[in-house]
Length: 425
Image (cartoon, rainbow, N blue to C red; front, side, top):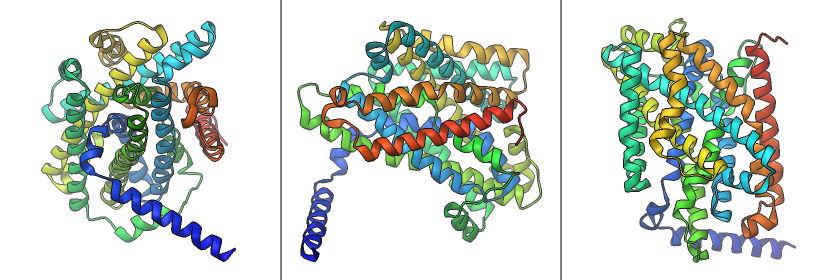
C-alpha cells in the first residue's frame, strides 16, 4: 500500500514537472485576454460602492468575503469558458438551441434586462469619474463616457486583441492607483492577513457582506466569457482547443485574482483611512472628497482616475455582453453601436432625471440578483451534459461544487433582495 502511494506521488510529481517544463509565457500569451475582459465586471462601480462601505463601516473584518467570492467566481467563469470551447457556441446560443422557444424567449428578456442593469452601474461609474475629475455636469460626463465607449468598440472590427490591450491598460491603471493608495494609507498588515483568512460576521455587517458576495457574480460576465473565448477556437484542431482550455483556466485564475487584489485594496484603503479615523462614507463621491484632506489632493485625483478607468472599461465589456446576448438568443448579427445605444438609454434617463446615483446602483444590483438563477442554472445544466460537452464534461466533484456555489450565491442574493425591500431578520 505504501509502495503504491509512493508511486502515485512520484507520478503526480512527474506530471507536475512536465507541466512546468512545457509551460511557456510566449505560448500562453496568445490565449490570455478573455478573462481580463470579464474581470473588469468584478471591479465595476457597483463593487466600489460595497467595498468602500464595507471598509469604512467595518474595517478589515470583511476581507474574507472577497476571498470566498473570488473562488466562486473563478469556478463559474472557467465553466463558462469551457462551454464556449466544447460547443463552439456561447451560453446564449446554447439556450436558444436546446430550450423551447417560450423558455428561450423568457431567458433572453431576463438576460437583456440584466445587461442593461449592468450597463447602468458601469455607465454611471464612468460618468462619475468624469464628473469628479473634471467637474463636468453629470449629463455631459455621461455623453463623454458614451463617446469614449463608442471609440473603443470601433476597434472591434480590427479584432479582439485591440480591445483587450486597452482593457489591460485600464485595469493596470486601477491596480496601480490602489498600490499607491495602499502605500499612502499605511494599513495594519497584520490585521489584513488575519481577516483575509478568518471569517467574522455579525448582525451589523451581514448585509454588507451579502452585498459583496451575492452581487459579485454577474450574469453578463458568464454570457460574455462563453462568447469571446470561442473566437480563439480552431474547429479541426483538437490539440489547439485543449491548449485553449488549459490556458483559459490560467487566464481566469490570473485575471480574477487581479480583480480580487483591487477589490481587497479598496477595502484595505477604506479601512485604513476612513474607519481608522472614524469617518463615515455613504457614496463614491463622498469617498473621493474625504480622501483629499486625509491623504492629500494627489490621492483624491488618483482615486478619480481609477474610478474613471474602471467605469470606462466595464462599460465597454458590458456593451459587448449585451450585444452577444442579443445575437445569441435572436440569432441575428447586431451592430455593436446599436447594442451600445440600447443599453445606455436607461442610464441617460436616470442621469437626466437626477436620480440619486447610489440608489440607482442598488437598483441595478437587485435586478442582477433576480436574473442570476436564470444564468447559473442553464450553465450547470449544459456543462454536466456528456452528449453536449464530450471530453469537456464536468467531473462529478465539479458539478457538486458548482451546485453548492450556486446555492450559496442564490441564497445570499435572495437575502439581499429581501433586505432591500425592507425585510428584517
